[in-house]
Length: 283
Image (cartoon, one colour):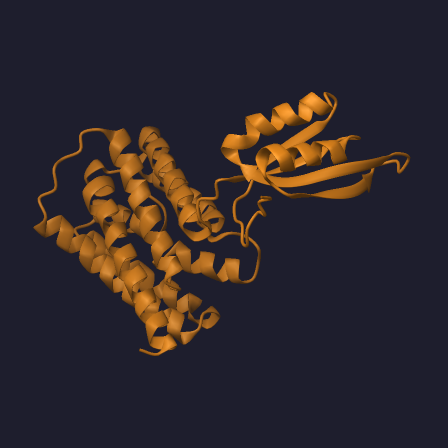
């Protein structure tokens, strides 16, 4: 099998699995609980509640014009994969609703979290397969292609607007709040799938004793780092900034090392949302 065919096969697997998981989230959790979500599923559920049109058919009716709008901004292969994802998702939702007798979930919290998680996992896998699940994710793909904004952030903004509209239509604030929680779970899962669950923390340490702190970090934690030279805002005082990446569980030990050497040191800990390469370990 050529490299191209192997790559496309991998994409199809991601898209098929993701579309099926997305459909499960809608059919088994959100639809029975009447909890709306964002994007095409949310709009399709709204159409289903107001008319006799099935959720799957509504998805196709909504996605077709959105894809027609976005077709100018995406290449042919991406468009074909997206159409495949739309068809699998729509057919799966209607088949699961009509053919599978899934146990009733009486907890709105469980329906919200599991529904949002399934949709997030599904959309994340579809995006990982270089396609779109349709709806707002098409717009998210276009925006992320021309900017540094993550697809999940674009989806969050657009979906929030959809949920607000649904709230006005149904006049049910409680459902809106549950739906917003579901969307939050969705965006978190999408980010984890696309960027990976990074267990590392980025630490900046500003201290006059950066050299000593660096030596202790190397000896006790086995991690290398970088010492950067800087100045305060007035340019009157030079400062050394120690940059190091460590595991989250090593932060307490690192804090003890820093404060033990320089109690006045400034220590800033940040999340590493994505990391390539490796954080060098010193033997």
